[in-house]
Length: 377
Ligand code: NDP
Ligand code: PMR
Image (cartoon, rainbow, N blue to C red; front, side, top):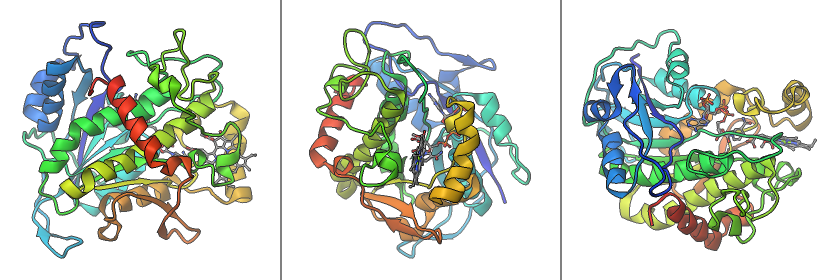
């Protein structure tokens, strides 16, 4: 088994407002980002080049890798490929992202780039047994699958906090950061010759108001998106997508609705043209992860047994990683425009999302407003 564990580190995956900042290349362990990406990641370099032309973009990068071994692998259409797949997973330093990296690494068929903001944490996380690494540096790495997994959840915050660019932190990180990253890496996905290239975005049941979990207050609701149109900056304008009072739990659930709508708009705009599979998923309630680190201690104690014994929605990190790994790599899960869930026997099925999370007009509007905010329109 050969692992490729790397770390590409977007600090907040986002770009500063026009004219506000003069970011220099950040230096990591003495390596300038530009030097690094020139030698390491063709797709990261392209992000930098593109955004340099448009605006500034703050991406930090560092990597630890193993050499790639050629493998033969059966694919959905029966063709054979003689190379490993290359997958970028954001927020892979813990929880679902890390478990997915492990599940994919164990197959020996994937080079995994862990896109994390904390390099040391990512490097520590990548050091699990039987996963040999080297520091081989290669350029021209293809991108076959992008997994948008990183997220923050700030349920106890009384006041909003903001990304460096001035967006409310949960929607800024969970939605806008991934929106920008996916848009910038779309060309790399298009160019991949891998038999099944995919863009996967992690959604959640709590953003879906057609479920009991989605009806626990505060409920997700994007409203007319006047807050998103206003830039979510909290300065005379609301930090919430719907323009309402700040509520950290709702902001997270709204961000998950934006994630699911973004996937659908990607599917509508690009699936036919590119052949890329666009999918979202609810991996189950992984009640033990760092996602709940900002919650009150009592919640963190009671939440896992509540989910295990009462709702029975609990899933272990390991099991959730296997589920997401299926959406990355299973030949049977190539359908695009789909939201995946799993039943009690851990069998995947296409799930229906709520009316709001499947509203094509809203999807279009989220897309257009987000484009403006991240500087793509
Ligand atoms: P974790 O907190 O364990 O993982 C989230 C990861 O995101 C961490 O590695 C974190 O890195 C990273 N991250 C956060 N902000 C940034 C940023 N600005 N830049 C880069 N990385 C960042 O939580 P989970 O594993 O539970 O969450 C993973 C995904 O699963 C999320 O999208 C979540 O919404 C979704 N999900 C989780 C469920 C659950 O029950 N846990 C249920 C449904 C969906 P760092 O450690 O540096 O903060
Ligand atoms: Mg929920 C009936 C099933 C069910 C499921 C599958 C979840 C998943 N939850 C369910 C029910 C309930 N929850 C009920 C009945 C209650 C009221 C007691 C409840 C409460 C609750 C809280 C306070 N649940 C929560 C919270 C959180 O803070 C979590 C959250 O909303 O994070 C955004 C959460 C969750 N419940 C889930 C899942 C998967 C979560 C968290 C993760 C996420 O959506 O990303």
